[in-house]
Image (cartoon, rainbow over all chains, first blue to last red; front, side, top):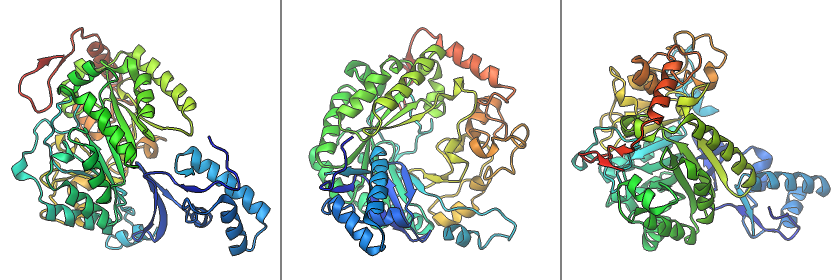
Length: 93
Length: 380
């Protein structure tokens, strides 16, 4: 699997999209034969995985929006993205 | 979740919450150019004249989405046999549904792929019968099918659409399971379904020709575990287990009327593919009832919902919320009683009988298929 660097531009894998589920009043990630609930932090990260923002941009935005330590955010987001890439839900360009 | 609360509102306070379904299998037509001997369609196929029209399906998609369905699987038969397939994809997409086309890929060229993508299609699932063209075409009952599928898979990948390869596994191809997964990866699939044949409908009729030996199944299971490791992060490998040789039954449909529903070409709403084989169930039609009304109130959906219908040994079993007593249709087919424990379960008194059926079938020397939808059995 490709390593995530500051310059990596993560985006949702083909066939994967975020969807607001009105019936359940929650964001979900829709993928082939899979539906995943996306709670607050996951949603905050995934909504920024647009293939344009760099990993470094995403970390900076989240650190600013959540008034959190960028080093902590970077570790958490890297871990989350690695997990999502392992499940083929996110790819990096 | 609020959907459960909302849906539960008309029920008595003590009634269990009926959660909204996540998936809708839309069997748009039973027409298909292929004649696979394990087809999940019923033996009595519905004809074109009885099919729901574009407007009816559009209403169904909107009602399903309103109820809480998130994904629809446009299937058949061959969904591309519908002349209005682009309109149907667009209607499902416009309803807010994730749209998955389950296709033989016959008739799927680059132009059609592009048109489907532009109509809002999210994902394509193509079936492969084997890795060897000659064998694949015999299984499909269609000369040249395999070559067309490979070309169509390339077109799907080139269009940037997500691709799943579905490989139904049985005696004629089980030795090439690894090659099937490798082929799926080479075709650019992000996901492969390794689905051991499930013995209902046409597959039940053809069980003697399809059933692998226990030794083959054990090798296949070990191979799959190894492939999952080697393809980790590159290819999602989902499996449908061969339950005749299993110890525990499969959690069929994730529980009866729990997660998804099927609608047949003529609009009959079913809790699963084979539900119509169970005598005495009352099926409602989307021509007469809304999808919501069917999900909550159709007698066939409530027949085996939850665990209240269970007899022993299921009723007091620690796994009753894990595998839901297995499959009702298999209980009917083998035990003659849809409320019985699925004979795939080691706790069923018929478990040894099921195993004996499988072992006897697997020793059948000649593979001779009754092709789906064709009159005469042909040599395979």
